[in-house]
Image (cartoon, rainbow, N blue to C red; front, side):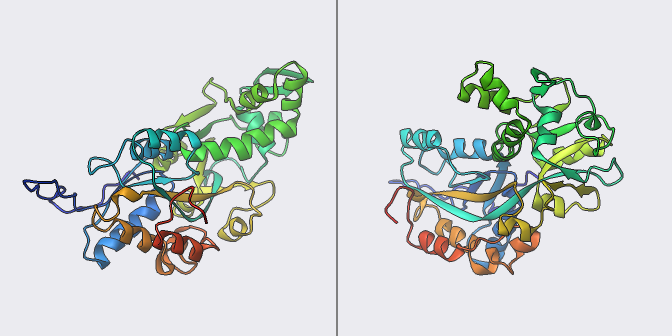
Length: 345
């Protein structure tokens, strides 16, 4: 799904004798989860305004924020899409390169789902404990912390199919991975008693937490560094495969995938909006304020993205799977005021 939308044939504006004019299109990169939403908005923006269609690229949240923080100027991107909040270390890296005024824009919410082949084994219900027991590097077995010995799901949960463990999870550069670690692996580690056993065995709490997030390296768990289309391809090729996806991607591939509940809750826009579904997260994009007024259409694109018509509960983004933010009006005002992170609210 890494897409470059059509842009003006003239990507860089003419250079005068005294100063370089800005390029004439907005440039965006980052989260593969946010990508389909940003692509919809970019195309609509190009079709409905006098500005060129923005260029929207994928690459993952961490990669997009790294590019965003490279500096200020038309040779750097204007917006980073992210499926997690920007980290303090990234804010510091931005500041070191002169990117000091950052506008954080929350666009709504998404859920992380666990899906498999429509015709594959009956993977219909998971808990964080199941996922941790399947792919944790070290697990608790017979009261001892051991290298993960499990080869099939039914070995630790008789209600799950007797099928080979084969999970395809987001690589470490993806914001989805961070949410997966915190809301699934860590919870599963705690609920199985593995974390307590690690600490009782002499580990510090921090070291035990890090160990809980380690995944096995024997091929049962595979990091996917590309976007969700790569994960889908892996599942297409493996009847037993379980993939980690954003809700919107799943909902647009229900002809190929079936989804499992997590802790007894089905992932839907309603259960995510209510907070009932346990593996959900806010989605963001970050705007380089120094580029507003320099890159044509930058602020207009940001405002267009979070308008009621696009990001509201009845807009096209909600139809594609985005859970509308109940505080959208507050975000709209922050963008209108160009309120940067760290400013008094």
